[in-house]
Amino acid sequence: MRWIAIFTDTPAMLAVRQQQGQAHLDFLARHKTEIQLAGGCRSEAGGDYIGGLWVMEVPNRARAVALIEQDPYFSSGARQYELRTWGKAFEGEMVVL
Image (cartoon, rainbow, N blue to C red; front, side, top):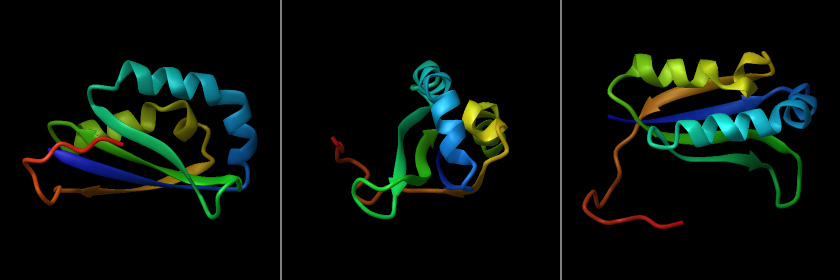
């Protein structure tokens, strides 16, 4: 089942990103078969990150929550998330970013 996580960062997250950035990227790499697309969001090009988005392919909501809450960025307490199921239009087409 496909899920998306939409993350919203508090101002404290800027420091967390500096301290936990590599641990976060390592976490994503370890789980890349489940967290298939991930990245930060900004209000404007070149601005500070204000959140992020993941697209996950996991068996259920519980697994999506477990992944999110094990991420070093989330465990800092400086970020919140919304979790939604997601279906791709044109299901049979490959997406390359």
